[in-house]
Image (cartoon, rainbow, N blue to C red):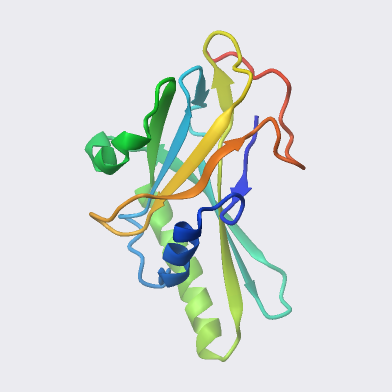
Length: 180
């Protein structure tokens, strides 16, 4: 199952405000974190969680960069999300691979150069993942994704409790493939 959800789909209002106030030109790529909450019977497949950035400037074709995220070794960073782990759910956390930091910095530098020339644009981000099931597939696959943009900062939800089986326009099969 591929679930790529743009930041505005089912996004809480407080998160919209947080994103609007975030200056992505100063975000440290090493501090960027993504977390995904899923039912315990559903897991992200290894090396399948991605962060997709789409930069649109003027009339030029949008530039899309997709980053495969690495597992977060230190789960203590999720301490603020413990209250979000409800019965029957688990949270998985990811970071930008250090090798991809240079790509992110280059994308940001290009955007800043264009802004310096007076070009206006926008940045859209999305989190995607391929998932598999452990045991029987659940009747509902509720997904919540989180983003953290600064070291020591809080994770905030991009989308909360989106049922992937009901997302219009997504290729969501009726049965998730088994893990393993």
